[in-house]
Image (cartoon, rainbow, N blue to C red; front, side):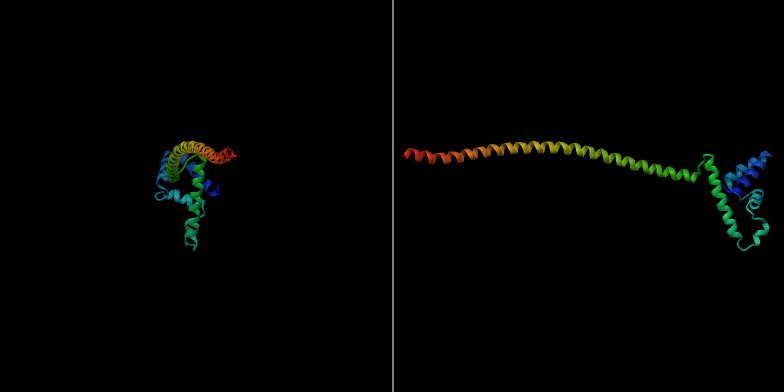
Length: 165
């Protein structure tokens, strides 16, 4: 974690321990940010090397932006160590959770419909197989009859020939 961030929080917590007013200011700092706390701003500038004299430097705004960015990143990391999550992150995760919950319900519904369709398809296939078996048996019987008819046709001329002889 950023050394300057830890130094800032260490000094700030020491100051807060010295009086209840500082604790109230810390709570306000957490809720409102840095806008109304000149004392905390002074401490922030000091810890991040942004004293009033450095305001005249041409790259001061870059230094300020980097310090704020470093502080915010370290603050998020610090909150993460304590097991806290920002409201922004929580709402983002809650939104993703709801979307996944809806997707899961939709997929479960699709699976249910596919199972029903598959079960109906199995019944249809079973009926098709039975129908095919009946058809095969019928065709087999018809073939047997056809063969008998051919046999009878062949037998008649041979019987006539035998009778003539």
